[in-house]
Figure 1 (cartoon, rainbow, N blue to C red):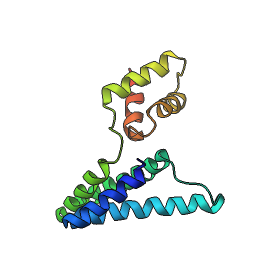
Figure 2 (figure 1 turned 45 degrees about the horizontal axis):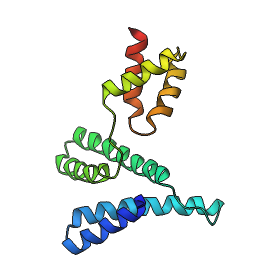
Figure 3 (figure 1 turned 180 degrees about the horizontal axis):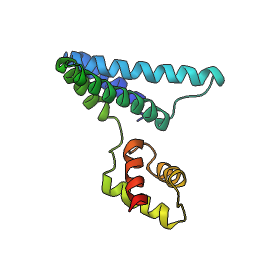
Figure 4 (figure 1 turned 180 degrees about the vertical axis):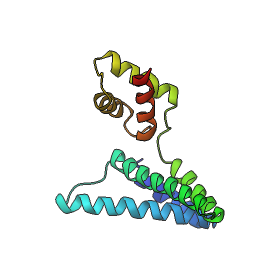
Length: 149
């Protein structure tokens, strides 16, 4: 089952159960996915969004939510921050499990042993390996620790 189909099914289930918070978040995610699909179809009318591309769109949505949470907290708007946290939790259900700091460190070490010695080459090789399962900022921190040590 594709990710878009799963989201559509979950949207229908949320409608039936009356879960308005989940319904709103899933609709918003589907809207973003359909928008990305239309953008892709503008270039090739027969093209469809792959699951990897759908995950990429959802990761962008999750990143926006994280940034919003941080800004709302700085502004003292805990009510809006908690709503964004709830939305983020729902979106996270559809994303692949994120790697831990130790798992990222092991991937960085593997790339380092393979011959990548500077920050940019380590970052490039590591990001190829993690493919959206880790935040770039965290990967950068791990690489800086590796190179600083």
